Amino acid sequence: MDRIPILKMGHFLLVTIQVDLYDRLAMDLEADLVKMVSITGAKAVLIDISAVSIVDSFMGRIIGNIASMSKLLDAETVVVGMQPAVAITLVELGLELPGVHTALNVEKGMALLSSLIIIDEETEEEEDDDTALS
Image (tube, rainbow, N blue to C red; front, side, top):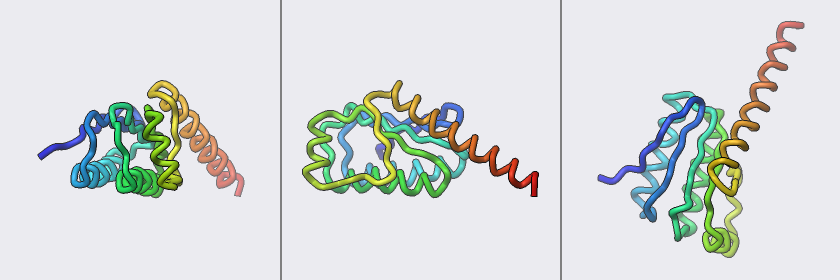
């Protein structure tokens, strides 16, 4: 059975998709990734799709589901490496991918996720300060 590896690096989970996803593999990735966010307490998920040449509406929905479920578990999701043809297809399909942040490459995606996590940490500190004053 095929599996997409999920790597943990600090507060980040990294997924590099090196094959075109078929439906069962995409659904397994969704389940595995959400489970890993829950188990590890990861704050960020980076999905590299630079090797993916085809994204259909099902795959777009899976990416959106991953982002929504991760957000419910307090983790942000960034998709990086989207090829122009994939972006065109997603727009033509009318998929908006709510909750999914995008970046040009892994380096910019990591920077974006770091900034999103910093914002969350600042918010938590403010909430702690408010609680301490009460």
